[in-house]
Length: 127
Image (cartoon, helix red, strand yellow):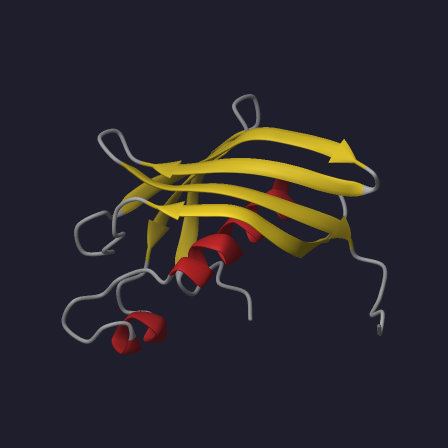
């Protein structure tokens, strides 16, 4: 499931700083379940948003291989934090994988720090 245009919308993109400002949709069904009356953006959704935004700036679809580090430092409530910025601090290639570090913040708060590893999409492999 793609979260873009469901859970969030891209409000602006800055290719130079590799950042996106997004707005959340508090009426999204995800927030109805997580949690009724006190919506909180699930951590897995934050990681999925980072993946979708990375695919916007880096050619070719990326498949998340591993999460090296995910620090959730503050709750993202879509009623209180209507806009946040995803900034890709570092994107590098190593042994065929794309290593990414990202920061989710607004002007006052750092919400999340991520270290993610992606492989290029080349079909399904069975191990």
